[in-house]
Image 1 (cartoon, helix red, strand yellow):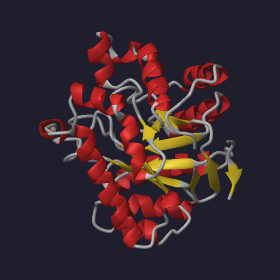
Image 2 (cartoon, helix red, strand yellow):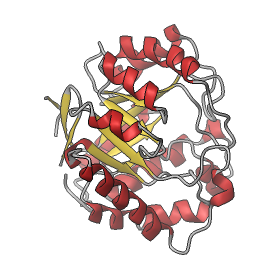
Image 3 (cartoon, helix red, strand yellow):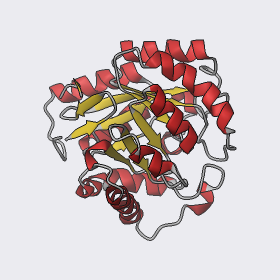
Length: 286
C-alpha cells in the first residue's frame, strides 16, 4: 500500500515511525517542552536524526478535558514550525481539527492533515478536496477532547469504530478524494475506556478490512499507565510493547514521542522476520 501526500508517495511495505512535535503548553506528555518555535524546530531535527519517517506538528492539545485554542493562536504556534520542518526532507503532517489551519498549512506546503475529528467540521473536507495531492489521516473520536471520556460506551467498539471510519471513507470518496490519500486511526484513548483500547489492539486486524493503512498512536497513553501502574514519564517500555503489538496486527505507521527507541525496536522486530497480519518500503518522492 502507498500513502499519497503533497510531496511524497510513501511506500508502506515497512512500518513507519511518525514523530510527535507538540507546540503547546499543555499536552499530556510533554506540554511546554517545545512551546517555542526554536525548541519545536530543534525537536523536529532531532526526531528526523533519530529515524522518524514523518513528523506530526500540533498546536492544540487533545488530552482529555483540553480547552479549544483560538484559530489565530494555533496558526501562530504551528506555521513557523511547519515552515522550518518542511526543509528536513521528510513528510510533515499538521495535527488540527480547524479548516482554516488546514488551509493555511496546506498553502504553506504541508504534506498531510491529521484530523482527530475525521474532517467532520464544516468546510474541512472541502479544504482537502481543494488540495488534491495532500495526505489525510482520519481518526475516530466521540465528542471532543473536553467531553470524549463521558461518551465511552459501545456495544462492540471494534465494529463501531470500523463503521464510523467506513462512513468517512465513503463520504470523502463521494467528494472525489482518492482513497490512496487516506490512512485510518482508530483513536486509542479518544472516548474509550482501558478495556475498549485493549480490545481495539487485540482485534485491530479486523480494521484492515477497510482497505486502507492503519496509523496507531499508543505512545505514553493513560491506558498504558493503567496496565502498568506507571506515570506518564515512565511508560517507554509499555509504549514500545504497544507499538510492536500494533505493527504485528497490521499497523503501517506508529505515532510516537520516543522515536529512537521505537526505530530500534522495529529494526529488531523486522530482523526476526516475524509474520504479521498484513504486508503493505522506502519512501519515494511523488
